[in-house]
Image (cartoon, rainbow over all chains, first blue to last red; front, side, top):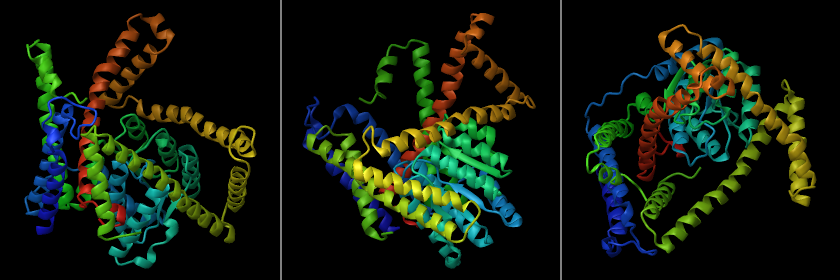
Length: 292
Length: 207
C-alpha cells in the first residue's frame, strides 16, 4: 500500500514538475511554449479523471465494496469452457486484431489470463491465434503465467498461442479454416476488431460454437450481436477483467468510469438545454470543452 | 520476456512523456515524442521475426507429423520463401517477382475474403431481422427504411425516405454510437493510466 502511495506521489510530482513550468503562466501561446494554454481544459479533465481512478482504486484496496452489475456474457464464460471440456473440444480466444498499442488489446489480454486459468484447471485445450507479433508475445506470457498459477506449467504448449498472418483477411481465412476443421466448442472474441469480425463470428456460428464477443468498435458491434450468443458492448469489455477477477485495481477503475460517465451525461444534458433554450452563455459553455 | 522494474519504468516514462507532449508545443518535446513513435514502428518491424518463427514452428510440426492438410503447410512454406527471396534479391518495385506474386496471388486472395463479407452479412442479417420480438421487429422496420432510403428506388417510392434515413443515422444511431464511444474512451483512459502506473502488468504475463 505504501509502495502504491509513493508511486502515485511520484507520478503526480513528475506531471506537476514538468507542466507547472514558468511558460505555463504565459497567456499567449508561442510556438515554443512548454505548456499549451489552449489545452488547460483537457489537462483539468485528465487530472480529475486520473484522480478519480486512483481514489477509487485506493478505496477498493482498503476494502470498500464495489458492485458490478452482472454481465451475462462473462457469466457464460465458465459454462462455455465447461462445455468444451465435456465435448473434448477446444476453446478459441482471439484478443482482437489490433496491435499492442490499443487499449482494447490489453483488455482482451487481461481476460485471456482469467480464461486460461479456467482452461488449465479443467485441462481444456486452448487456442489463441494472433494477428500481430507483439500481442503474440504478450499473449504467450499471459497464457504461460496462467498455467503456472493454476499449478499446471507442463500443460502449457507454445503452439497454443499462434501467429496466423500479418494481414487481417489472411488472418480471418486462417482462423476460419481452423474453426471449420477443429470445430471449437467455445469461441471468445475480445479486443479490437475490424472488417474481419463478421467473417470469423459467422463462421464460428456455422461451426456450432457458443460465441462470446466484445469490442469497443461501434461499427463491428452489430455484426457480433447478430452472429454471437453474448456480446460485451464498449465499456463492458474494459469491465470484463474487473468482473472476472474482482481485483481492486480493476474495480476501482470501473467505479471511476461510472462516476465520470454520470458527470459527462449531466454536462451533455446541460449543454443541450442551454442550446435548446438559447441561453446567452451556451457558446461559452461549449467552448469550455473544445480542445484545440 | 523481460520482467521486473525495467519494463514498468520504460512504460511509465514513455507514457508520461507522451502525455506531456500532448500539452506542449515545445519543438524539442515534439521531436522526442516523434522519435518515440518512430521507435514503435522500428520495434514492431523487428517483432515480425517472432511471427515468422511462430508460423514456421507450427507448420514444420504439421508437416513432420503429416497432420490433415499438411500439403497446404508445404505450399505456405514454399511461397513464403519465394516472397522473401524475391523481395530481398530484386526489391518490391513494380515489375519484380515480388510485385507479381503480390498482385496476382495475395491481392486476389484478400479481395476474395473481403467479398465473402457480403454473403456473411446476408446470413447474419437474416437471423438478426427475424421479427420474433418487439425489438427485432423495430430493427427490421428501421433497417428496411434505411436500406430503401439509400437507393434510388426508395426515393421513387417516397421522396421523404432519404430524409428519414438521414435522420435515423444522424440522431438515434449517432446518439447510441457516441454513448458507446464515450464509455469505451473512459475505459481506454483508465487502462492506459493503470499501465503507466505499473498497476496493469498483463502484458508481462502478470495479472
